[in-house]
Structure formats: C-alpha cells, structure tokens
Length: 438
Ligand SMILES: [Zn+2]
Image 1 (cartoon, protein in one colour):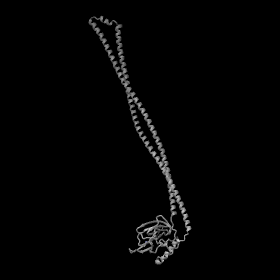
Image 2 (cartoon, rainbow, N blue to C red):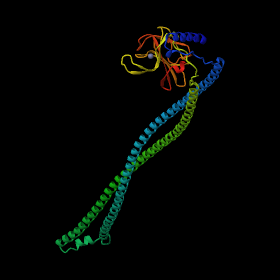
Image 3 (spheres, rainbow, N blue to C red):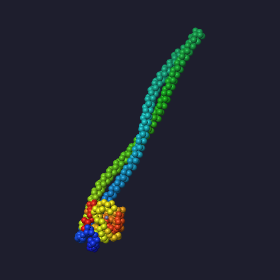
Image 4 (cartoon, rainbow, N blue to C red):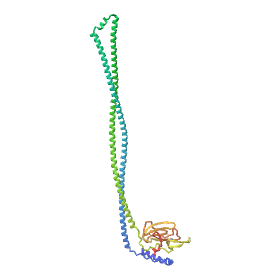
C-alpha cells in the first residue's frame, strides 16, 4: 500500500514539477524506513502494558464499587439504628411526660395528705380541749352531787331526829303550845324549815342536773370530734394507699425510662461504631480513588501518543497543483499582506483526502469558513488539519493510520474551487506543512 501511495505521490510530484513553478516543486519523499516488525512489537508490548493498566483500573473500579456498596450498607444500617433511637426517644418522651403528670398527681396527693394531717392535729387539739372541759364538768358535777348529797343527808338527819330521837318534838311542839296562835306559829316555823330544806334540795338537784347536762353536751361534742377523727384517719389511710400506689407507678415508669436510656445508650454506641466503620470505609474509598487516579494517570501516560517522526503521507494524491502556498500573501480582495496558514492543494472534487500520519481524529465537523474539516492528533503536540471537504469519512475519536482515506476533496466553506487546504499545527501554532511534507 505504502509503495503504491509512494508511486502515486511520485507521479504527482513529477506532474507538479511539470506544472508548477520551481518554488512549488515537491522533493521526492524519502520514506522513513520503519521496520514493520519492530513497530508491531513495540506496539504489542505497549498495548499489553495498556491492557494490564486497563485491567488494573477495572479491578480498582470494582474494588471502589464494592467499598461504596459496603459503605452504603453501613450507612443504611446506621440509619435504621438511628430510626430505632428516634422511636425509642419518642416512647421515652411519652413516658417522661406521663411521669410528669404522675408527679403532679403525687404532689396533689401529698398536699391532700398534709391537709388531712393538719385537720387531724387540729381535731386532736379540740378533742383534748373537750376532754379537759369534760373533766372540769365532771368535777363540777361531782361537787354539785356532793353538795346535794350533803343537803340530802342533813335533811334526812333532821327528819330522822324529829321522828326518832325527838319523836314527840313535833307533837310536843303542838301540844306544848300555849295558844292556837302559838301552835300555828310553831307548825308554820316547822313547815318553813321543811320548805327551806326542800327548796335547797331542789336547788341542789337542779345544779346537779345542769352539771350533768353540761357534761353530756360536752361528751356529745367530743363524740362528734372522735367521729370526725375516725373519718379523717380513714381518709388519711385512703390517701396513704393512693400515695403508695402512685409511688409504685412512678418508680415503675422511672424504671421504664431507665430501660429506655440503657437501650438508647447501647444503640448510640452502635451508631458510633457504624460511624467509625463508615469513616474507615471512607478512608478506604479515598485510598482506592487515589490508586485509581494513579492508574488512570499511568494509563494516560501510556496512551500518550508520540509522533514517530518521518515524512507525512501526501494528503491529496489527486492534486494538480499548489494553488496557494503557506506563508504571507496579498489578500485578493483586501489588498493587504495576510498569513496563509496552510497549503492549498487543487484537486478534483470527490478525490480522496488521506491521513498524513497515524493519529486520532479530534475534529470532524463543519464551519462556515473551513467547510467540512478534519483535525488529526498525531501526538507530541502535532496536529494536521484538512479543510473544504465534500465528504467526511471519519468521526471524532477514531484512530487512523497514515494514508487512510478520511474524506473527499470539495469546495465547502470559504473556497473558490475544489482544493484541500492542508494545515499543520505544532505546539499550538501553525507551522509550514512543508517541514513534514518534504
Ligand atoms: Zn487555503
């Protein structure tokens, strides 16, 4: 193939020599005599290195994915534990709120207990006062009873004296009377005495009665106080049993809160453990990513195209002449000197455009000035540009070899007739294509 191309080019050069001025005479292309076997060997060894790098990168990517999967498993495990903590917290808060209401109820019960205690103490004081009053009433009663008894005894004595010891006194009083008047006086006197004693006796009996009544009233009121005390004691007992029940309930709930705290504590330890493991996983992922970056850099380095040197394949084998050369020229319409950054090769429309060297297509597109154009990266910062094509045969990313047909000559874009504008860029700037074509 190369020799055929060479022949075509040689013929073209000869043709050109006959058609073009000496300025445009193309020297015979001296082929870079690369050993095909060596070339293949070196490409084999580099491609096996690249394959190894690619395999390593795939492995690292798989490891990274696995580490990420582990991390998300840990994260979801942690999330579910955190969810459990959340619901435990909610349940605990409910119990805490309930305990607060129990505490309030307990306070009420204890307030009630205190007021019952106070009421009992006050009642006791009243009972004591009543007892003392009863005691005093009893003393008064005893005294009254004693006075009455004394009176009674005295009257009894007088009567007994009159009827026994001085049995005839009454009669003698009557019969020894000097006159009726005297007798009446005497009986009246006796009657007066008798009446007096009787009145006294009645009076004393009334005093006793009053004392008894007073005592009885006091006893009745004390009985009421006793009754009240019993009621209060019953209430106190009731309230104490309520207090006991409430205390039991509160301590049970507090134990529940304690259990919740313990559970939450252990779950939080789990979360901490998860966090630690996730952090470790993050470190592992970071290490894997660093390794991956290194491997990718190594691959990029291995992939880095290096221009092998040597002369370009003539890109427009059907060319008839150089219609416009690289360099400063007078602009046809503006009349000023302008830089022409490529070589225009007049060629029949539809004739082949060939890749000047091995490389990768980095542009295959259309612009209003360049028409259909192609750019090929040959490595070592060397790029070739092909413009005004009627058709493009390659696409971006495609690897091409020197001499591969990449398009057809045309007159698209800013062009006055079918030709290939061939440009070369080295290190980011246009250079004369002749440096590579000669
Ligand atoms: Zn041009």
